[in-house]
Length: 225
Image (cartoon, rainbow, N blue to C red; front, side):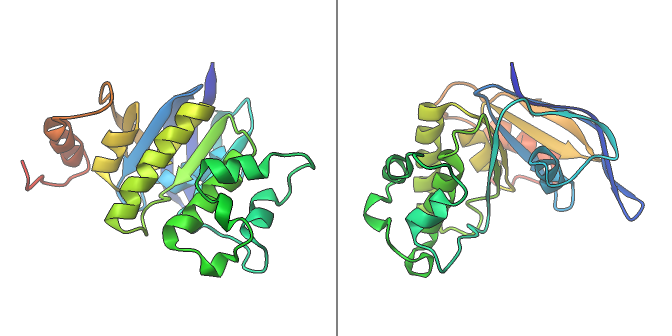
């Protein structure tokens, strides 16, 4: 069973081939992180999986429901947190339960502009998870957060993933984040997956060698090595 299966995906923009015969699979309940240099096509892949873009060539199979959380929470400022999470849902969806899961039960009636960065991202996650997706796409959702808030969000995402077990594809620029969170760490370069690493059981320690390897695959020298 796969939450998503991409085969031979080609996507071009203005004559530039961003994805070049890309093959990638996200298993049901699997947590996959995708790393790549800026402009390597990571967000393009997410847009295709979300149905927001279409491939020029290749096949994309996403058998179940899909939800997306972006770097910008994209909350409607004129609606409360609860109303943002419930937007577009059928009557009877358990919005309050989901808000409690992400630690926002007491902020349900708050306006988005009064939320901290971490609270806004929690609301964004709640809006995605309340739909019980079989594939959850995370497009650099922690990139704008401070270090301590980011660590708290990592713990929250792992907890929510453990409870709901969607397949997750996380796009990130942060190698340490990818290694800490994912079952598999993929490296995208030249429009294709050039490396596929399995960091091993959690909690993860002594990941320095893997970190150096992934950084080298991204063309970065690990000064901490």
